[in-house]
Length: 288
Image 1 (tube, rainbow, N blue to C red):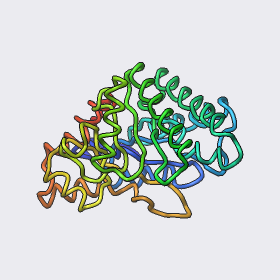
Image 2 (image 1 turned 180 degrees about the vertical axis):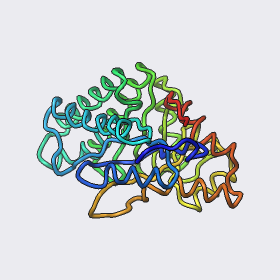
Image 3 (image 1 turned 90 degrees about the vertical axis):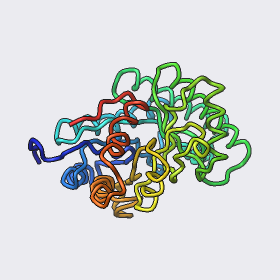
Image 4 (image 1 turned 135 degrees about the horizontal axis):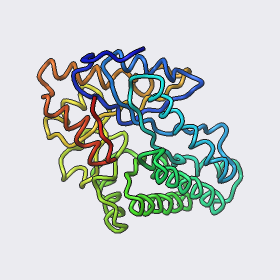
């Protein structure tokens, strides 16, 4: 797979995907390129069947995710960056396997701090996914999750990077809670990227967070009817047991070109979602 000048007329970023060397990996990236995609934010994929048991183990798994983004840049015409952190559900899994909540919290905190170190080194652009489990948990686990969430915000503030947020279903009320925490800690809301977002584009809906919207036709059309401050994602899982979940990696480029063709997207809106807002959120340069 080689890049040809002029093959893609504009940059197309999938803002949130997971890749796995044991699954599609570079072949999925090749499909993304052939569909018109040019840039990927590769988010650390947790392996809940083999979670790290110490800080060093977390650092080693996070480096693997950074290495995949770096390999994509070396081996394909696609530009990629890494976003890394223990997943919020890691805390629950550690407790399920017998760790007291306090010890599980300390372990996940060490993993978040290892993520921040790799961002400082330039091997990743953001800390994430961080936040809270997307299902009901005990009060002590929820309290620990929120402490870890706020710790990730403080680290991002100190090193001037974004966080990518995973929580329960995204509503204006959830956005208000997240925004209040970020404001209290001093993390700019443009740098709080709400992963797996519905089309909450209006300020009264997202409370200033940066929406990363699932690239369904309906969500895309609803989002662009409200404004242009959002990014697009597939949350592609690269899981051979669930092919194409959550969305195929080809979806963002196909959707971008299709909705431009039918008039739902303008070229200016595409530039903002694929170039301008990623620059604002992450400080990255998305260009051909």
